[in-house]
Amino acid sequence: MQRSEVSAPADSETLRPAAIRHAQRHLARHLAALSEFCAIPSISADPNRREDVAQAAAWLAAQLESIGVRQSRVIPTPGHPIVYGELAASRPGQPTVLVYGHYDVQPDGPLEPWESKPFIPANRGEFLFARGAADMKGPLYATIAAVEAMLQQGSVPVNIKFIFEGEEETGSPNLGPFLEAHKTMLAADVCLNLDAGLLDYEAPTITYGLRGIVAMEIRVHGPRQDVHSGIFGGVVHNPAEVLARLIAALRDGGGGIAIPGFYDGVRLPDETERAELARLPITEASILEQTGVPALWGEPGFSPVERAGGRPTLEVNGLVSGCAGDSFATIIPASALARISFRLVPDQDPELVSSQLTRYLETLLPSTVRLEVKLLAGSPAILGERTSPATRALDRALAAAWEKPPYYQRGGGGIPIVSQMQSILGISSVLSGLAGPGDSCHGPNERLHLPTFERGIEAVIHFLHNFAQS
Ligand SMILES: [Zn+2]
Image (tube, rainbow, N blue to C red; front, top):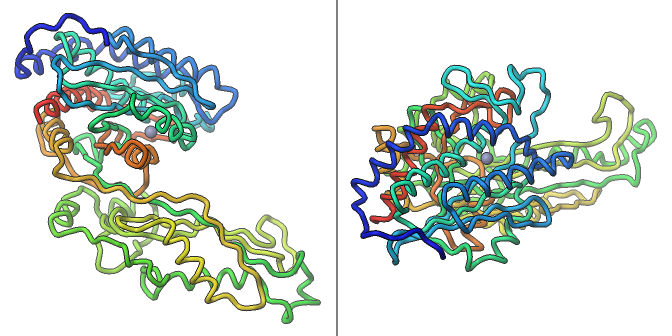
């Protein structure tokens, strides 16, 4: 690998503040570049935006090139391309950080609620408004700005590999095969992922756990086709009713799940972890306000924060049968369909949960109907080591940039890339982010909080230095 001339390894305690000062001095330029990036409508889900997505990839590769990442390139996939680049540390024997990001964005949706056009970035107050500003062009660009500031001081303290994908918002269909095909190229000690957000601009956050998922379809088949209830009512069993009974039987009397064996693999959070979760600035009142429900619900014995991140759940995501639209007809429907999903925690096995559900439903099923159960998707939960060197490096980095210790949260959802990094490359991820709950990721008027963006750049500089020393 090419490298600019290497002087004697300078002290990180002089390089680090120098890099931070450099980033601060160049903030206006970074903001201009980020606005340029956000102006590219790289909506991965929209086939008409294919060229825009490609343009965003080219823009990123050029950006990496311009800061001194000489190996940067755009690598095609069957879908949208991946941008890749490498930098060598100033000294041999240093660890390697894989910096993950995605440059695609959500669709802009109905334009009416937007106060300024989604792809004409606008500065208002402390915010940059644009689709993708928070999720996650801003956080991604913060990693580039941080590395640029470090390179301006001569070198980076760790080996760095950048991987930026263009299909995160469509479920990363080509990322898994890409990781499989480039295992050696992507080898690293840890992955830094800033796509997990923070609890509040004043609450730097490390997401150390992500729940897994099992998504399934349950179909109950009755008569060959919809039949007249005046003729067959009372004689033919109604599949919609059978399905309703089956679904009701999945729940125990409280908020628990009644499927035999379901809780066997579930690991309970330990006391330290429960105490840490209790610190999180999330209250019953804040959840009531966010959702508009009259009261909270759920498994007794666990706080809302624990239930939403540390306990497994079951949700009915959709029900379809008979007159599901506006019309009404007196029929017995031919079939009834439920789409359900579980959120899993360590150490539950998605395949096992799927077969436990199927077996349980079969035992409950009356002989008057037929049952079809399909597993649509499954991935296990991820739980990071809260005491790993990378997590400690990130902890100290956030604490330095925010001048307060970070919060540790378990994310209720999953980030597929994190499981893929783990299962395919054997690389664990440290997760944080710069998008707050009010930044409308995926909604209208998406925005990036600029003081948080600035702290983010600083935190990345700290993280890379901290990790080099660990
Ligand atoms: Zn994202």
